[in-house]
Image (cartoon, rainbow, N blue to C red; front, side):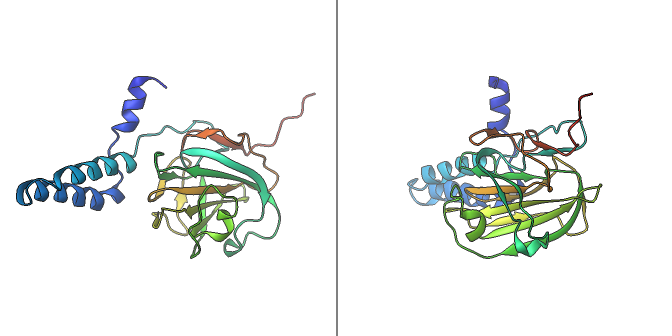
Length: 229
């Protein structure tokens, strides 16, 4: 990645969810510097800089071709397995490929819509706060599950999962809303995981350990494979 691109990511404006934390950091730095002899200035400044970095929301450009499943988050792929989507979404018991992306504290935490379609179901389930890089986090941890109906009638699920440090999942889309691949739809604060359950019969094009760029990296191709003649 070029230096200019790296700086654009690091210096990107913060997501609105970070504003309360930034205000707290600035207030602590200013009041600590002016009223308390300066001893709180540096902790307040460090906290503010951390929040600016954590909540950064860089611009992303989705691939132009239709029929692609995009990564819903930055991070790296920790598992690609066949699994049943969360029961609360009502997508049935059939196994489908699940791509799990782990977001460290250093990753961009803004979530992005993986496909064009319509949101048919959003279901929040309380749970544990296990480390998000563990496979059982998909089942046991607190999560927000979203079902998206593609234009051809197939369904895809994307799940925001809280982690060991994460305690707040934000989702800005609603049931019945039409969404486009690459659009922002939420954020998870301070370390998390995002799972994608692909439509039945669709395989992932990524590998475990691969680094993801939310809204840009292609996870899968929804078009049926061409048969050579």
